[in-house]
Image (tube, rainbow, N blue to C red; front, side, top):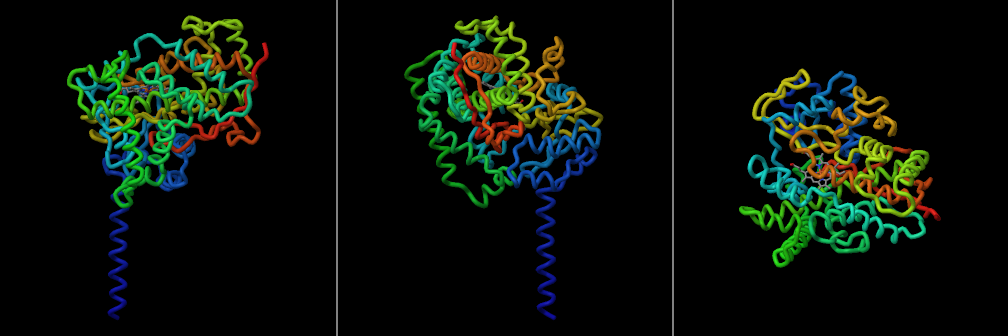
Length: 476
Ligand code: HEM
């Protein structure tokens, strides 16, 4: 009898603990229950199986939103509930609203501890203006086409007469060198030296901070701390700080020098700003460059048409220049379409509002994290005809890009300040490649279905992985 009542007590305590954990981890806050909630089981299953954000959006979030005919949903992620905006008109309303602020990152999470919060991404008001002027000054207004062309030529010497190359890896290295040389004032030399310590440690750290289980359940960092990962992150940060020291002794015309010369900047701001610009400046563009070259490989007729256009404007030898790109509308359309299909950023950093917002027919309470779901906006069938099909033609007609539906760089005053830099980098490298090489995707490629596979990313980026491409040099 006694053992029976002990068993009942244990069962009751276990149920209470489970209920407590359930309500702490998974229960949607009552003030959000009037907004359609994306069902939990498929979301959790998707996180646990390591699916990337784009798959979760296309498989779970968008079909649910379609079934409820809504452009705003509530989504569980990282142990919390977020409002997701999936429609471009609501997205613009949100991002232009003056009462919103970036939600401060939870530094218990390893990946936010890596970036820190003393940087342009997280600061507001006068602090933001200070950081923003440093970023804008280092982007120089002028697009560094010469740097992009020089990198294009280094790329040719790497690809030689052609062969099979891991393009996703090359994309990261070339975009790292572009932002290193043109913005940060430091040549990482990643294209020519893939084995460099910088490239290796960074790759390792990114994989560490993106372990799906730790991203889905950040409290695991408390229960099972990963000291080796923290150590690697610290090593990487000390490499950044070495560059900072170098710049103190030898100032240049670049981001790090401008940071040092800005009055009132703290050591924490130097550290966090260098880490974030390093990441923001190359990972996103690498994802975009990988996707673009893949779609050209998968659609040879589009590749041939873009090549004809490039040759008709540039001829066989001359380097591209800014005015040339206005005469390449098809190449431009292909870039836009590839960034729509596999948007480099899937969601923005969450915003919180100081007052209740009324968007899309819902009251969004103050203090609740809200994200612009960029990938969903770019795949919303209310906006795009046949959103799953790669069709650059949709961007050829005159007004198709100016109505604000295409927002891979975000929206409102905090959208990407380096849009031009990134787009000209993509245009320059792709037009140089088109003139020099033909390429295709190997039959055994993991991407051979035509749907790009992206690595799971803690920063919600679409980063194609193991993307091999066969290049063949064009004989002239
Ligand atoms: C294809 C390439 C790129 C894409 C798709 C992209 C996308 C974005 C997006 C969506 C945001 C807004 C984030 C938010 O609202 O939460 C953003 C912000 C930002 N991006 Fe980019 N980006 C790209 C390239 C770059 C490059 C090359 C740099 C630097 C050289 C850069 C620096 C920044 C900075 C500093 C911000 C923060 C702006 C602020 O908060 O005021 N990005 N980017």
